Image (cartoon, rainbow, N blue to C red; front, side, top):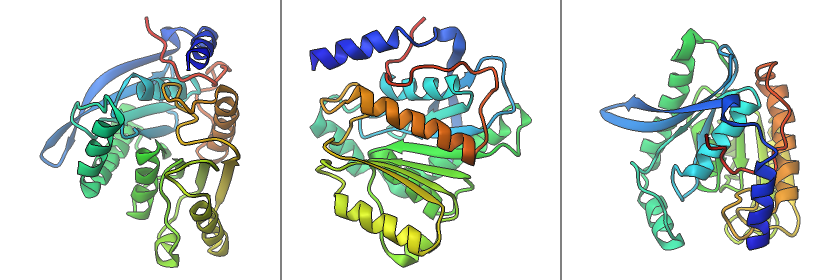
Length: 265
């Protein structure tokens, strides 16, 4: 674990400083609820595609804000809403309790509110928007698309999937799925059935199954973090987003995406 953390920190030193992506806390009005969110924007760019970053069961922590920062460095405007009202999963037990207590309809409403926020930002009503989620967030990324959210790209990273033809038929956005074969939570067989169902339905889908890896391999705070595989996954994500949403800000620098450590001023 210490070796992985040291590697993550050394890779973080390769990333641009905070001047490349300025993040801020904002408040969304979703129904009667005020929802805190973190917004990261590429420097000097406004009319660019947007992404909603949906956090894992650990909550809206520094790591997930680092994901939004990274996407801003890729040239996209990113928003990460707080589904847990400021609570963080300090340990696996508490994190699982927070996930179990989450009302899915409310969570999807917050994702929709985040999409609306991105389209009101800078008057960019026509901006394409995608969702990207990890673990619990991956499941909600898919759930929002199945619920009819107006998204042009759906990224599921080791999140629960659906396999029924009825559910698949509701999916309109292209899908990128990134999974780990040794994931104890998301069975490889279920992912294969999901992939087959999408193919049979003629859906636009791309999958990346990482053999030998476990759940959380893209999260540098988790024991299963694998920096090189994470780097490969981020390269796939960036290329796929360019194809489905369009390129980010043209001035966005090329960065080593292997680390999710958030750059601090």
